[in-house]
Length: 370
Ligand SMILES: Cc1cc2nc3c(=O)[nH]c(=O)nc-3n(C[C@H](O)[C@H](O)[C@H](O)COP(=O)(O)O)c2cc1C
Figure 1: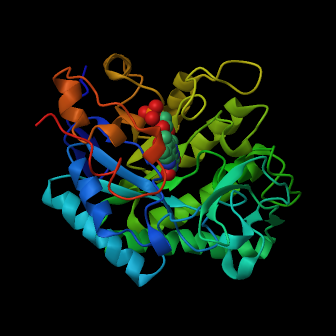
Figure 2: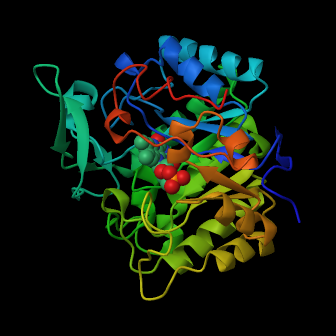
């Protein structure tokens, strides 16, 4: 059986090891443009087998928080080009996480101050982070969304396609479609946020239709071997709720299997919380999900995440539970996490106060072993 430090081929991506950097929003991109320090931040972490960037908005409509980056304006793409060049100069691999927040937004972030869009006009019991009238950061309730019209959906699918093309043009090795954590695609999947009565709501097949549309468009544009997806079958993040996630995500696995994806990235349990957290009546069976994907012909690398440490990660890979493990918070505080894991070196402590927003402090100044 392979170890955490063995190489892995995921579609067109050759990973030097199976330690993946999970996507981590840091709110340090004023005007949605990644600044030069972002290139340094990712380059410092380039020894990961794969870097997944922070969630990156495919359009302004897809924006839900202050100072998160985009992938839809030339200056944003120039900022990302600095990042991909810096990571590649260090021998790393990097994919960008494609993001549309749906209802997890605020009118002040939306084009012309409009309501955010969602499958249904159901407000999330959730907060977002904006700049108030005085320019100070503030946590506020998300705005009540308006339900998307059926004829608007192809336009959003095209936005994902265009963003995937832009990502490759900006030098990324591929993309990870963000279908997790209660954002737009997840809002379509789950009955708690999807009350539609058309072909995109109701049955499991209908609720997964938007995900399938997006994934097929992205794969058509850049190839399945450069495309991954992130899902979080049971997380309650951003008021995501479904009473019966097992059959829902089994169907999602069957939709994904024929697309020849590079990887499927699963958050187990509550994002940032308990890995055995569940929704529905029974514990979620991740092995069954993986088996469904494989039985349906899926060959993408299986990446797991959420509160893994070295011994959990080694056990997951050694037992065949996963092909790779993504680490989030440990990578913020430990740019040389791969080396520290390999050498059983102590980990730096995470500074919670500098997670979101700010400059170099808590971003590019965590020490390496050297
Ligand atoms: C500061 C911070 C920002 C995050 N941003 C994102 C994000 O942009 N996209 C995403 O899918 N998950 C995001 N997450 C969730 C992480 O990717 C990961 O799932 C979570 O931290 C659990 O993994 P860990 O225990 O290894 O940290 C974020 C988590 C944190 C702590």
